[in-house]
Image 1 (cartoon, rainbow, N blue to C red):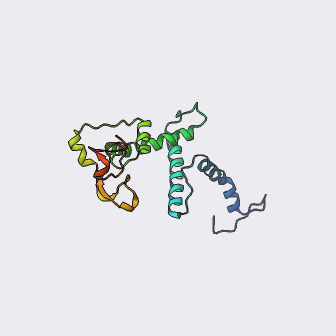
Image 2: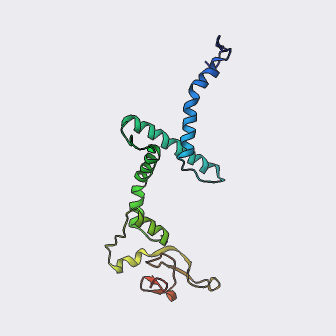
Image 3: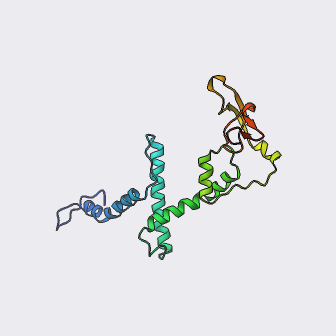
Length: 179
């Protein structure tokens, strides 16, 4: 088809153009779905832009396969594509979120509140003496409460806000700001 020079007698157009015109609707539909239900973010790094595009196409392809297997999925909802992509993202994140929730060292208040908002409450069954070892950094960092010119380094984290704090600024397992 691509190598021959066949021309349609009625329209006078090459067969390759007619074939393209027949199938371009699906390409436009995928482009439209990628535009409306995109995970893409603004970036100047082309590998990341390519990765976002792959995620978009993978989400749409998986939705098409799922809808073919389960035609009644969200049939009454007008935004079935958006609903499918949200559920797909949540399912893909479940294992990672469970692991991240079990080890909250290094998380800030924003991340901890986000975990709580989606249903992950803090589950610490360890006694305080065992928890102290979990709040150690592998590499020393500058104390978050000291002035930068003092350059006081520490390997310990506050158990509440997970910021590095030196011995001068900490109570047992907490910094002076947290209490």
